[in-house]
Image 1 (tube, helix red, strand yellow):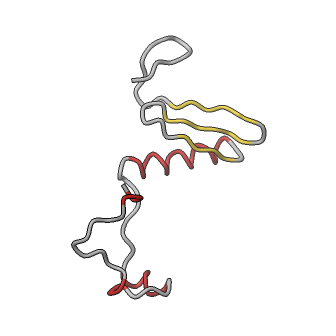
Image 2 (cartoon, one colour):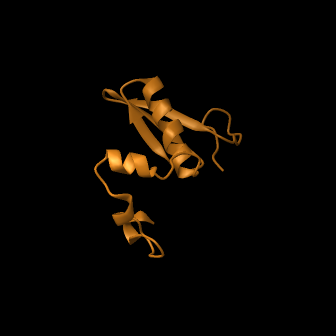
Length: 89
């Protein structure tokens, strides 16, 4: 659990936001997920997306139609019973 630099109390869901050069940096203290953006709003929006992905709340497998639209044959692009590559862990 993280502590606030303002009052020393613990705060669930604490986010830190600061500027470095032309970028705004946003960090979710509990998870350590950090993002950036060219504005405060962009950095926070990116953080929302990244924390959602980290928590498994965002993202989904593409549909067969989406795979075909990307030029991929769904039948030839399935892992079946195979484990995914280590890089995806």
